[in-house]
Length: 156
Length: 201
Image (cartoon, rainbow over the protein chains, first blue to last red):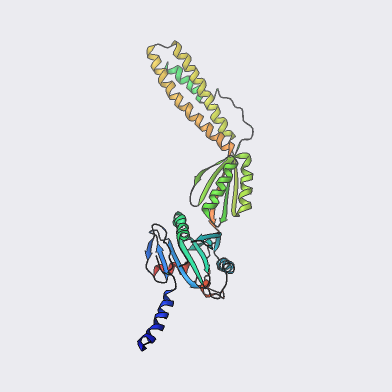
């Protein structure tokens, strides 16, 4: 093996390993404009309903059940009013969502967090908007979550 | 002929020929509740559903208020349902005795109907010129009778159906404290304000 090969081989392996992280193939909700961002998918509707999908490190490592409880408790303790929670599936993977309301300025907002635990990674979907605007787009937001293949960072 | 019509109208419209019977207690009930809710739309849907189940309906519906009409004897049940499900922060009740208004409208209607009957009798004996005069007066009278009938129906409806007005106040107006005091970094970064800020940058 030549010196060049000896140098390039480890580099190639490192590059391969980095490339192994599959892309986060998420769909933005219909009628939302998408922001290009390598770390997350960000989208916004004309009436300022926002949608974001992020992949984070599952650290400290815990399972879906643990993070569900921790998420709900974190939001409730912070003062969010939980209006709905439940199971949600995306790309065959079971997740959890919690919808809350909270005042922002003089308006009432809805704030959604959906969570999918994938071994060493967490996929966190957040969406928020003024109450009426959010509600008008709620179905499309949920459809986008369900339609996404969250096994995989970055917009599709 | 004009004198006859005028005298008849004076006698009956003035109530001289009207009955003076006062009905039993006839009360229109109105309730006004302000409740704290986590979700206005969901609360409105639930209260409207309950009103419909009780044989009522909603008469107005806005972002802040829903006005429900339920059979008077069911209004207590609706109010109990609302108070059991949401925290009332303000409540007021009123009852209005509409019997005087009802009696007055009934009496005026009866008088006008009797007057109309007189007109019909006059028509039988009137000549061609008088017929036009009586018919004009009768047409006007029919209009007045219909207005009174409508008023009577509205008054009776106020007795039969209680009005329950529900005002919504969002559960709390305090901003969430996204100060991040959990042991988990990613959870601490979550929050409505943080999310919105990411899009406003």
